[in-house]
Image 1 (cartoon, rainbow, N blue to C red):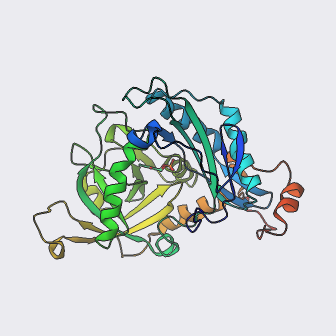
Image 2 (image 1 turned 180 degrees about the vertical axis):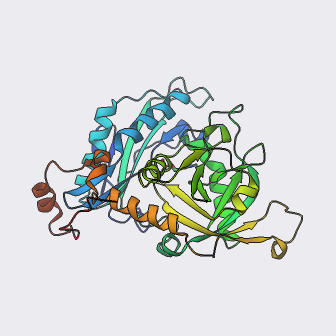
Image 3 (image 1 turned 120 degrees about the vertical axis):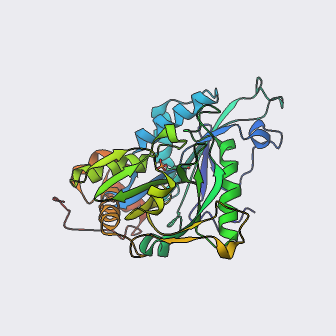
Amino acid sequence: MFDTTYFPGAKRYWHNGQMYDWQTRQVHVMSHVLHYGSSVFEGIRAYETECGPAIFRLPEHIDRFFYSASVVNLESPYTKAEIMEACRLIVRENRLASAYIRPNLFFGYGNLGLTPKACPAELTVGAWEWGAYLGAEGLEKGVHVILTPYKRFHPSQINASVKLGGLYVQSNIYATEARRLGYDECIFLNLENRVAEGAGENIIIVKDGMVITNDRSESILEGITRTTILELAEDLGYPTRIAPITVDDFLGADEVFFTGTAAEVTPITRITDSRNRELPQEEWPVHVIGEGKPGPLTLQLAKLYSEVVRGMNPNYEKWLTYAFDSKEEAQKALNGKLKFSRKERITKF
Ligand SMILES: Cc1ncc(COP(=O)(O)O)c(C=O)c1O
């Protein structure tokens, strides 16, 4: 039996066009992906709305999925439209009111040379309930991160602005190290010694009312949440800027926060600078951001984001794809599971 402690609500998954019970095992141990990380994936969330679960920015995620696939020469056996339908279906099949959705395209069983010449491209989609990625308390009160000396891949080495399975080994190693050392998350530099991003999150800073973030030329994955937040900030009337983030900018910012599908908008309130690993951990400098609690702009953007993804603001309905065809269908299938029924929707900022 597969333990579902870390996959609450998961009952079935989609594999190459068919639905399988969560307990079914069917990938061969000699599959190319297991040895070389030759896969691309997406991380997508569906939120509970008054019309049932709505998938946030699904077409944008699937566009990025195809872009990632093109970088590793993976040809999807399914079209974008078919994959979007599979995402909607998996939420319905699992009877989830809100969900994290994971499409994964990989080289399967065929040959084990580095060039996967005989390996078919296989596609799976899973869904389950995933709470706040960096913890509910972190989302509310802010997290303590560690600035590491480790560097993200430079664009001259590999196109790292994609969700390529093998690339995530670096995130895996240093996110684990950060937690072992007692921090919530790690921050990577880029080859130019500027700040790149977190293990699975982008970084946005606020300085003198300006919302600033970097782009792929700084060795980051340009997140969909990041793009969303930039648009929301502009709609709220704040100026935004795409520019490199130096370590001084980062440590001296008025506010700092993470953005990501999993992490959503998570304030960063403390940064421990561990770049000099010759020092013992007790001597790594600790920087408090602002007053050591989430700043006003971060809170305002986090609130608006949380309302937008839950369909509470009609100005951004364009970003929602409902899993069910109608509210009635959702109510019936979820059988009272929909807690959310908000009478008043927000019509103004
Ligand atoms: C390395 C990395 N950077 C940034 C992000 C944020 O991207 P998004 O907002 O599209 O989830 C993610 C998450 O997918 C990520 O893995």
